[in-house]
Length: 139
Image 1 (cartoon, helix red, strand yellow):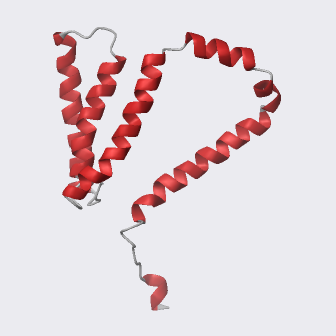
Image 2: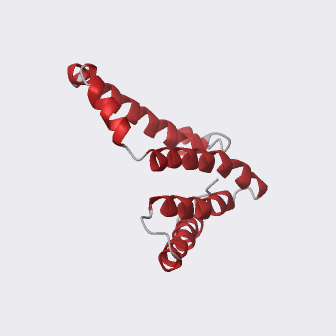
């Protein structure tokens, strides 16, 4: 009976629980969309080619590249200062700044000031909240 009330955490794999859970839910939802709209999807070749021709490729591929780089760098940077969340903080500040600048329509010095303030303040607030209020470690 005492075993039912004890909790053991494997810290080497515990950070994979939520990404695996969210990925599984997204996969199931995607399969549900494919199943329920299979005819429309199969007949929409012209729609996809038109969408790709009209889309903002720089922002689309820029977002993909920046997101991949962000996730690839977070753990190695965090490994330099384990269990402090500094990997999250140090990689999130340039990521938020780069994504914000990527989506800006006018990139002058006056517009960059609020972007840079948010890029520093938002990740720092999230890092502080998770580290000190919730006592959770980030990568």
